[in-house]
Length: 118
Image (cartoon, rainbow, N blue to C red; front, side, top):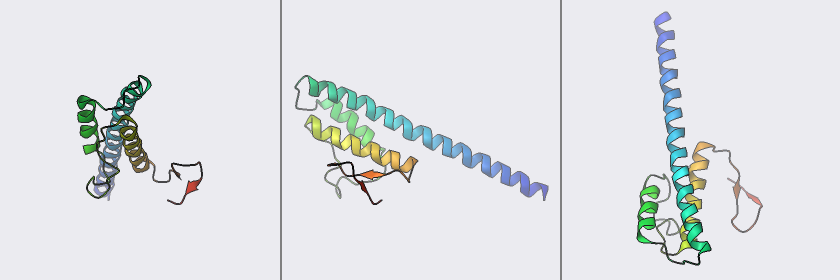
């Protein structure tokens, strides 16, 4: 009986460590997206319409680790050459990561503040 309790404790500790690592990994990707969005917003404010190759490469690297839409099945979730559409893709990626972290998170339509069914 004591051995079963010890096994349960070890299992729960392992699960807790895994959850913490998953959360850390997700938040690191969110921060990487934030940095890229900052760079894209800076370009937008300067009137630059095209995403430079180095930023497209960074976006590709980031989007590869975002679970969810397959770019072949969801054409809206792929690398873009224009700044604003690329920002939209990155915001969508962040929303996916936030939903993974908190599945109860409200879903909003892009056009207004009305909540949509999840």
